[in-house]
Image (cartoon, rainbow, N blue to C red):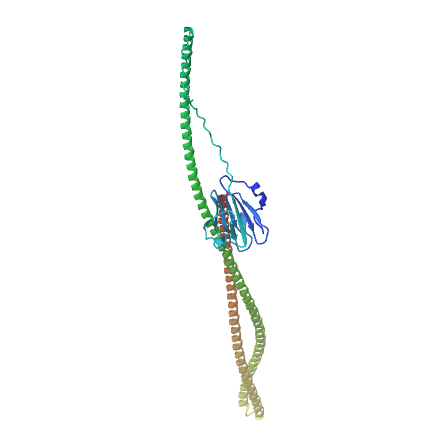
Amino acid sequence: MAFARAPLAPAAFMAQTTSTPGLPDVRLEVRQGAARAVVYEMTGEEFLIGSVPGCDLRLPGTQLPPVVCVLNRQADGLRLRKLAPTLPVIVNGAPIAQSSITMLHDGDCVTLGNVDMFVELRASAVAVPPQVSRLLPVEPRPSSRRAEAPPPPTVPVAEVQQLQATILEAREQMQRFDTQRQSFESEERTRQSEWVRRQQELDGREQGITRRERELNQQIEELESDRIIWYRRREEIENELQQTRRTAQETVSTAVRDLQQRQAIQTQTDGQLRDREQALELTDNRVRQREAAVQAQEDEYRRREQGIRQSEDDLRRREVTIEQLEQDHADRERELPERITQVSRREQIIERARTEIEQKRQELALLETRLTQQDSELTAARESLASIRTELQSQYQQRRDQLSQMDEVLRDRERKLDEELEARTGTLEVQFRGGSARLERELV
């Protein structure tokens, strides 16, 4: 059971207590279950009980309110004010209401959760100033008895004259005494009036002190209410700070999860893009191979076409030669009948050559048709590959732009959350420090 102040032994309480004039001596005996009792003495006018640093008595345990109650020691006794709305405060088995003031007496038991606090209240010994005695002059009372007149003696004239002189001198002394007595009485009356004036001034000062005490008590009550409001406000600020931290942590966790999911999607998309790029590379290789084969076929066809053109040129030249020969034959038919057989043979050769040329032309047309189809297929394959590549590149670029925008949005949100959290934390710390400093000044 750890408390904020060092305990005092019961036997040493009266020896170490510093009594404040006009205030009772208060000792608090705190018990928790079967543990050893701890004794506190109340040296000031207030005794704050709670669970946070700065309280005179810190209660053990968790999830306790920062401030539970406060004890006020005044001249007419000890008062208890409840400050925490959640934790019940029980006095002699009866709970007290929120913000209510309860007078405590000697032997009362205050229960705060699992802690019992017994109150020992003793009246303070106040030194009474000695009464001031006034010494006033007292006139001698005349004697009630009258001296009997002796019979007139027979005195000589000289003695009579001497006696008359003595009487005159005694009368002068009586007159001087009366004058001194009157002056003394006037001085005494002046002193009495001065004492009365001073007594009135003291009464006025006492009334002013009484008014000042009432004002101070009112200010103390206002300060207590302000301190209660500040404690409540500090609880609200702490709750708000905790809620803000939880919200920020949840937001950051959600953002991290979203980022992780998006990174996983991006990784999966990158893998798919890499697979498609590999497929495209394979397709490009195949297309290149087919293009090389087609190019080789085209070269072969061009060579064949050149050969066919050369053959046609040879045929044309041969036709020209044949025409010339026919003309020569027509001219020489009469002269050379033997050459008819040769001419017919040559015609057969020419016919066969024409047949071969026609066959080569048909083959060339078929080859051109095939080349056209292959060119169209190759063009379609190229266009399809280009469209697929363009689409994949656009999708990849869009995914990258979206992920970049999401990253920027997440970074902005994290930066804003960090700045807002730092600003809120700084504001709350400044408010808390200002409130703590003001509370410390009030307590001082």
